[in-house]
Figure (spheres, helix red, strand yellow):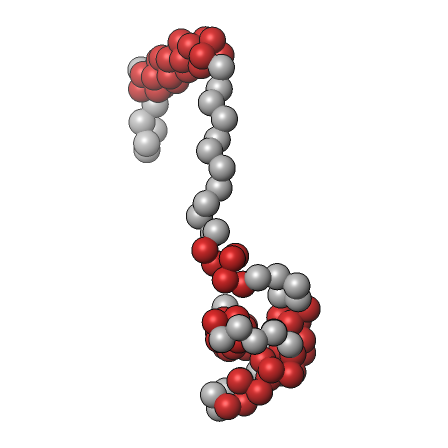
Length: 107
């Protein structure tokens, strides 16, 4: 992330934490108060538009709370296991047969 993106992200988090509506002007005011010089005003408006109407606190608390994944049918999982074992055996056989060809690295 660039300095501009980090500054806007932190400003948006500060505003959300204080319960203040996120706007480009407020983000820019916080960035100026923090004496961050490298942020163009377009970044504040981009972040304000992206976060418009969203509850930042809810987004942060629900980051890792995805629903449980559905389990695969038991029959399909059982049939796939022997096929994988056969594929691994074939790969091992190919590796062994390459060694017996008599070719050396510098031949």
